[in-house]
Length: 116
Length: 113
Picture (cartoon, rainbow over the protein chains, first blue to last red):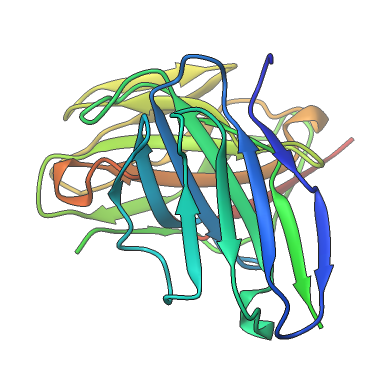
């Protein structure tokens, strides 16, 4: 596609439910990032993939968060047993190059998760 | 660790006014610096960047100069337009952070006619 596509755009979950958020990066982009953006805050790094390899997951807040990119393109962020503090916008971004690339990151519009 | 501090908003300006949004950073290495913009209802977009000291990034009339001596990357525009109303994020990346972007909290700008 022309840009980074994320789905669903909006998700309401009851506390304790599992959710899965999908990211379709720009075709051919090597790098893929997930960020979490709480209301009124800047995006916070969650995890980074170079192709199918998850090279950095230091930002994942707990072991309830899991991300994968099995074929090096589409990525899924899964949150198990959601809690209210997980409510945020989850942003996906991709870029053409790999590590040490200072090129542009292209962001999706985000998936807004609300946990009741 | 790395961090970015930018001025609190919201900032409200009249059309054609001069804009400055302050951004300072802390980094252990030699970061690249960025300004991203988020227009209402849209995703984050790169506005401009600078990869080394004294570089000036510019785009759409906006400018920012990488100042190592003051660890700053202030965003400026000489004459803002209503269409510049958005949230602006200062960010950095470097080797120590695995090149992941480290964002400030964002500054909301509203330009009135």
